[in-house]
Amino acid sequence: MALKSNIRCCVPLYTQRGRVGPKGEQIAFFKFPDEEQMKKRWIHAIRRDVGRFFRISAALKVCSLHFKLSDISKGLGGRMSLKTRAVPSIFAWKQTSPRKRPPPTERPYQQQRKTGRNLSQKRLRSLKPQEELFLTLCRLRQGFAETHLSHLFNVSQATISRIIISWINFMYLRFGVVNIWPSREAINTTMPEDFRKAYPSTRVIIDCTEVKCAMPSSLLLNSELFSTYKNHTTLKGLVGISPSGAITFISQLYTGSMSDREIVERSGILDLPFTEGDSVMADKGFTISDILPLGVSLNIPPFLGTSTQMPPEDVVRTQEIARLRIHVERAINKIKNFHIWDSVIPLNLFGVANQMWSVCAFLSNIQDPILTS
View 1 (cartoon, rainbow, N blue to C red):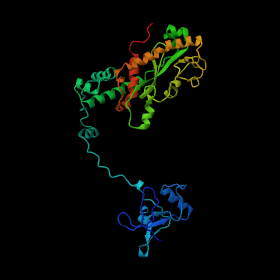
View 2: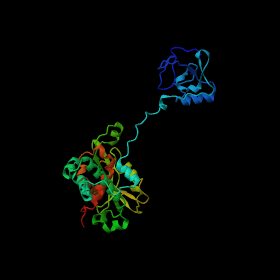
View 3: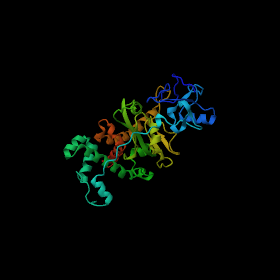
View 4: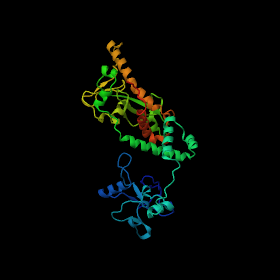
């Protein structure tokens, strides 16, 4: 086999040229085998696809650095040749990661747990459970910074952060088992007179709202979070209330660029038990009549269409829906009265943003109702 100094290896991520290796060793170059099955094995091994930019030819070579020593035999004069059925198998992407450092030694309390001794010696809590719950509510309702809370309770900021996350997750799990979706009979019993006269079939009033969040470094995530309505990166959620003003549905928070219709589809509100003849009241942006459950209608303000002026009956209907739909915005304002939403949500709270939103919505349900009898 004639070796030329300008010959090169065709394996990706490798730029070997000539017959002298990086360590001064002799390098040989081997052409692709003529047998079709072996040729396919070589192409698969080097991770190349035959096409416009890669074609098998006599000039295409693979160097000896990609074969095991057991695959190569040397003849007289040191000439190297491949053994039968040899396939390249040594590549840069197959190199093992550097050896990891040994695991740390076990702490004394870990050894006690394994042996079962001194289990009565528990880690002391810095604060009582009542104090931990109180500072969590202060963080949510008053929006106190973690630094301020650490000074008030004389503990470290890391302890405050750990306590808040633990209690928010705890309340989220405990509140999650409470069914806040009322039956049709409960809706009829508590329905105000204004709804009973105009829209007695109303089951839920829905609307979306947004809270500002910090801008991530990822351009893709930043574009998904950006809201043209707020001109800022936001998290967007769906809230539903009953005609009596109680919050009956709380969705998770989605990216700010998502449309109202898509949030309704993803939130799961359409999977809740509706009764035939129920109706959903919403704003104009909720064009969801085609995806509502069978027998459920949609009440939204009428569109102007191609007319230059809205008919008088449409004007009256728009005013009636706006007058009744305003209650869902009042319910959303009750959630946002938890002052943790006053500032931009930092990136380190993205992991518990959904839990905080749900907890604040549930806590606002046990406050004074927005509608009085």
